[in-house]
Length: 95
Image 1 (cartoon, rainbow, N blue to C red):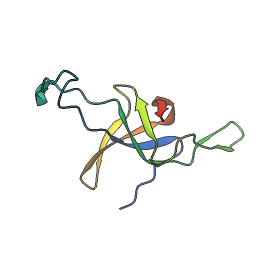
Image 2: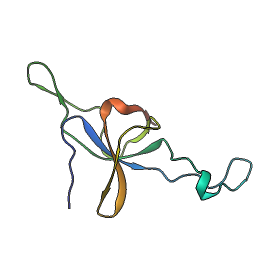
Image 3: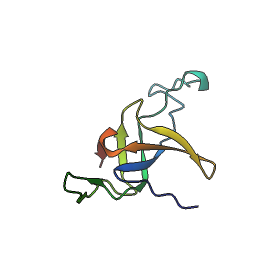
């Protein structure tokens, strides 16, 4: 199944959570925080302005992004946990 978000929404695959701290301490599953970065899987066509013209997206599939802790809606597509969020919820692109 293919999925394409509508308008200014993006489909994001969240990065894996860290299992160790920088000093080597192993973090148990119960206290892990969900990472606030991921990879864009699919993008919509873009938002519309007042005249009805489409404003193109500044993101593309494959971009590594940072987003807010509570951003997006969690969905499961083909057994994979993904997030759908608006382009405005994305804080920046990792280069």
